[in-house]
Length: 325
Image (cartoon, rainbow, N blue to C red; front, side, top):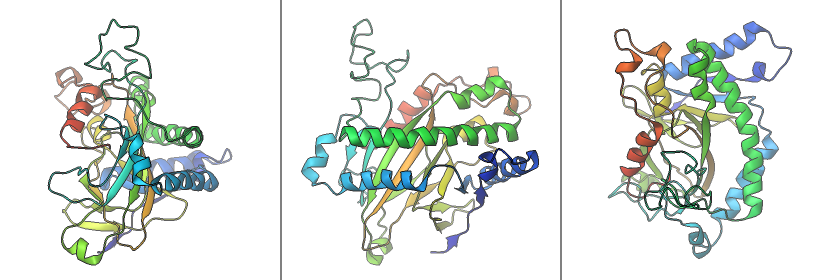
C-alpha cells in the first residue's frame, strides 16, 4: 500500500521561551492547515520526554504479554473501561487481531453521568468506586501501572493545552468557546496488535476496523488513513513523534471546517505491536454544537440541537457490539 507523507509540524516554538510570535504563528498555521485537509498530522518536538514514552510503552507491553487468564481479570462491565480481547469482535462478522485495555475517568460526579441502575439519592451514587453511566470503574492492573500512566498524562496535559491554544488562536475563538477546549478529560486505549500475514490482509483481515474517534483529537502510532477520495494509505511513523488526528467532536465544533479522520490499523508483521492512544474528550455536560464563532451564516447557535457530549457518546458506544474505544 502507498505510504502517505503526512504534514510534519515542529512544535518546538511553543516550548522555546525565546521563540518569536512569527515562529509560533507558523506552527498555528501548519496545524490549522492539516486539520482542514485530512485532519491528521505528525507532531515532533512536542515536549513529552522519549524516556517517559518508552517507559509507558514498556508498561503496556508487560501487561499485554501476561497470560490471557490474568488479563481477563481486568475485563469489567463497561464499553470504554477494562480489558477486551480480539475474539470479542468490535464489528459483527469481522475477525479482529487486537486487544486493548481502556481507562476513562468517573463521570458520576456530573448530573448526566449517573448510573441508571443506582438511586441518585443514594450516598454511593457519586463515589468514584461506584458504577456510572459508562459502567463499572477502571480496573488498574497495578499501582505501578497507574502511577506510570498518571506521570505520562501530566506531560500530555501540558501538550494538550498548548495544542488547543494554537487551534483556538487559528480559529479566532473567544473566552467562552475556549472554555470548551479547557473542560476536557483524557480517555486511554492501550493496544496490542497481532501481526497479520499477507494472506490474512488479502482476505480482509484487520487489527482495528475503520472508524472515527469520538473526541477532539488523539495521538497513536501504526495506522492507515483514508483520504477524501476514499483511498487508503499507510502512515509511516517518525520515531519520537506523535500522530495527532481530529475527532468527531472537533469536526462538529468547527461546523465541519476540521476533518474527522477515518482510520484503521492493519499491522503486517510477524511481531506484535504496542500503541498508546490518548483521546481528548469534552466533559459530559459540554455541548457538541458548533462554536458560536464558527456557526454557519443564517444558523444561530440557538437553532442548533443542544446535544451534550454525554448524549452523543452514549449513543456512539451503543452502536458497537463490544467497543472499549
